[in-house]
Length: 292
Ligand code: DGL
Image (cartoon, rainbow, N blue to C red; front, side, top):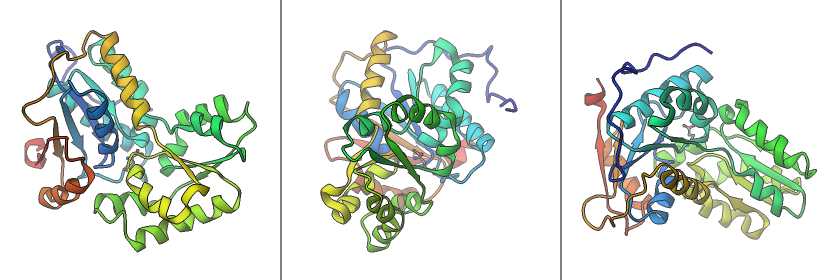
């Protein structure tokens, strides 16, 4: 693996963040908002700075090194905003970056990552056939291979892996409940249902927004599992362990500040209006010019 140059020298670290600082959350695009919302609901005292690298989405078809570098730059941006921890709310980015990021920041800046939630699917499957839908890059990474070896193999559960690069653009453009999107889903999900899969792990943070479409297509035949709540719980544990949990309720001000690196912020605003629950106050800003 070639080295990644940090944006700022390590001898110039940020002052240690306090419990009042926001949680930083990153995804290649707006899919990670599925995780950000779980965190916002589970931790009502916390503020969130969300960074979507919409100039470079999707990450799924990119090379390992490309994904690692884009992720390193995004996390450095969150660190420079004064965030107290970072959540890599993207399975694809996590697959290639967690080791590097943890080594780079050490205890100064805890990093929370994601891996497709295979364990609960394996434990609950009756047919002993489960499927994981994720990007090709996620399946190339070691994290998913490790969970398969740890949980699926000892339980004798067959794991079917499926990818579909059309799905992330459907979510990014707000077309996740359309007929076109459902037809695209059917291309990969009909075969796994035929093979007897009773659980589908949504191994990309964009996919929870496809739940309604998948349920309309397959009903109870396919149980859906995502990582959102587990990540929110893990974030709570890490905050408490590091003495960084906020104790005062966030009743005023914007709780979820979204920043995007490209694209049309107005068009994204329309999509976010549908994606983000009403009780969470949010804002969006395109920072392409500020990033240089
Ligand atoms: N949301 C990302 C994930 O969880 C992937 C989207 C992309 O391909 O950029 O894997």
